[in-house]
Image (tube, rainbow, N blue to C red):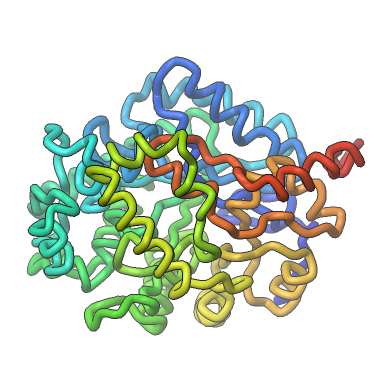
Length: 428
């Protein structure tokens, strides 16, 4: 069914005023003093400028372990989550909706790859014994594995942690819950045959998502529930999720009771498959960050080697506008719940085409918000994002830096638009 960007739609019982959403990004707000204020500063402009739905970036459901990068926010303390009502109230002031994204990094957690966190007591939760490529990197000293494979009862305990965090978030005013089902976090690790070789009921990775669904329904009621659905087609390995697998997973999730899905083409590795675009040379060459890179990656030489690998990945995963479109269309044809699409969406004409053709029910934009925090006001008026997909905003986040645009030409253009009044709110 065709739709227009300014038309409302529903996710479960949640009415969303339009079909433009801010995709989840790393806010790097942490949990310390000022964390809620930082989140308000980061997310409020999207609501004020007209986005119908804002996804807060990945938040970790346990007090220890699970952070994929430094300064991620944890939602395992009910008192902290309750204070987030200040954020949700602010978003609601503009008539927008807000969802929280729940996550645990599993084998992507920072204590695996970040040299500064190695040796900490944080547990590396694993679905199964790590696959051989990760064990090889461990032997080379590029990562440090000390995994603990979850028992069946511990998997259920982890699902319960997702449920508790969801319930606290719902009480704090969040309108929906979004599971980080891709980006190589633990949910994807359960779904992926590359990681999951279990011989219990959770050898079927969808069972983990079903267990999370059941915990959330028991603890948080009918709060709308969304998840990403990964297609690991770019990965050069035999044991991976195919497009057909992703479609089948989406069908099963609809039957379980998920209210919307976000199909995503990704990889089994921690690579650039989810941030396609140019090699971020400005970020890697930033003199002020060289010491932080050396600390994170185990020395300046290893940091340079990682930069080289990033350059090769930028060739493998070149920017492609709307790179999840084909997958999104397949899933849209297979399910009746809303399909949300993100990944390389930059131009209003492309957005209109995606919605009119039925490729998706809503469109999400991520990195361009680093360049234009009030981007919706221009998109809703017919403009295009000015993001150049250079990825200079992404690499510094590995060392705990906030996500901001670092490209002078883009910042200069934003300044021009600000002077022209292009970011005024839709109602004046």
